[in-house]
Length: 208
Image (cartoon, rainbow, N blue to C red; front, side):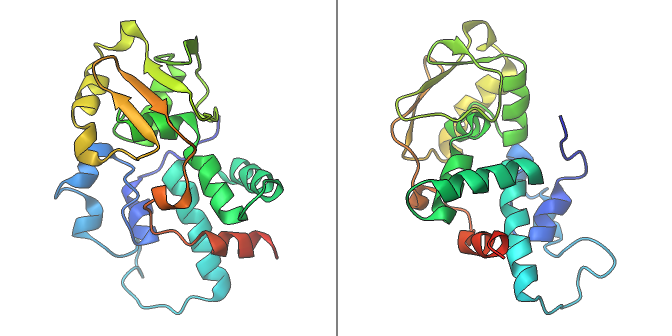
């Protein structure tokens, strides 16, 4: 499976915002974005005039990097969003939020989406009592995501659950810390997504 394997802190610097790709490190002073809040590279600190196309491209890249999705899969999500009722940009963000790796991260079982994908791939989670090891699995309203009983002693999961409330839990998910269960109370809406994203620019880019 193709995936980005380069330095993730450079991605935050390139997009000009924290993408929270390294878990707890992103909340500390060691965060590279806090030290160098400008794009990486020799000309990173130069002021550049960005074209309309450049703005649209940067917005697409930002969302792809937040959710850890590569181009081909991201385009499939967009095509599906266009066929759904409602606003295409909001539909796109909702589909990305419903991914199992995002739900695991948002519920507090992992400190980053990358860590969530690894835990899912290693068969540590159940959805409605059944094993699911596909990070892109789309959760529905009423789904219950839980850590397998044998996996509840994993240090990374235990530590992440303990600090979950400090990172903030979305309103559309409820967490039962005692039983290591999270319930999707409803599908996410635009107001639940607190990232600085202008999804209409992505729609404009793909609509050309």
